Image (tube, rainbow, N blue to C red; front, side, top):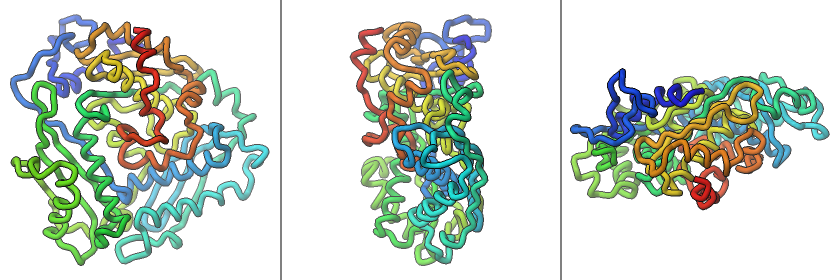
Length: 433
């Protein structure tokens, strides 16, 4: 893939989010339509992002897919499994389908009749953990039908096609990092996740007993000269019991969520605040609609700041470059910013079918780099392992950590399980560039 092919995909969004205008159609720049220098816009830009609570049907479907992933991974810690799973969730049916590939023998034989029975109880436990307790406005974890319609293959059968030399189909992955927050994440996405996580914590702890599982958050941030300057708006949709009204919910959100996270000054500075703007949210979530895994991919990654990978994350096998490559791309982008090579950057890697080495490793520093992007690309290839198995081993992905990552974003979380957030090769990258 040529550099222009990748960068032209992000030209318009990069121009908006980094305050760099598009050049004229006939202007040839090595940035594929993005001016190589930064030019300040005369107007401000407002960028928004969203996050989902654990009980949102689509997010719950992600959690179900990765609960099965974690259960598989726990059977053989440190060993990978491949394939991909999709999940569908409704009030009376949960279905998981796809293919799993892994080194089950000698623990299992292929298509053992008890294989899939091992996954039903973890799914029911997940439903309870996300607030479904057979109440009037939640489903019954013990009554819902669970169907597992996947085909399991043993590792020796698929070794030649699934392991190295590479994936079975072309894969495009992206990573992003920025210095606008200590977590090196875009501020709108980071705040949306923090608000959602805080609301979920209040429900799970019992501090606000009338909160129910479903909900989503939305945050808009004003940018000037490419930098975040103020929170422009916050919207929260939260499911609740009839014992609470919109006023009670709004007061709770402000007092227990927004003030601790944003501060009173931000809320008194003309911020647009909407709490359940369409009215009470009582009959919603899984009792009212269906969920499908993979729909929250933008929220799971970087919101509008970065292109989406060619495949979803939820349910992907732990060795699959669709998931491991996306995690590695974030790891690379974060190292670039931490090394002081750019203030913000997008990293793209492309893998062709049966190719272990990436066909392309491209960096776009959005005009903030201190060295040419090509030098950074050469440094990445020299310092970091980029084949599927090497990434799996380097990031230690053979652990049951994926259900934990499925909510409130994969990135920007300083938790020991998330090895892709570590900065252990900054000096090596700086020296290689």
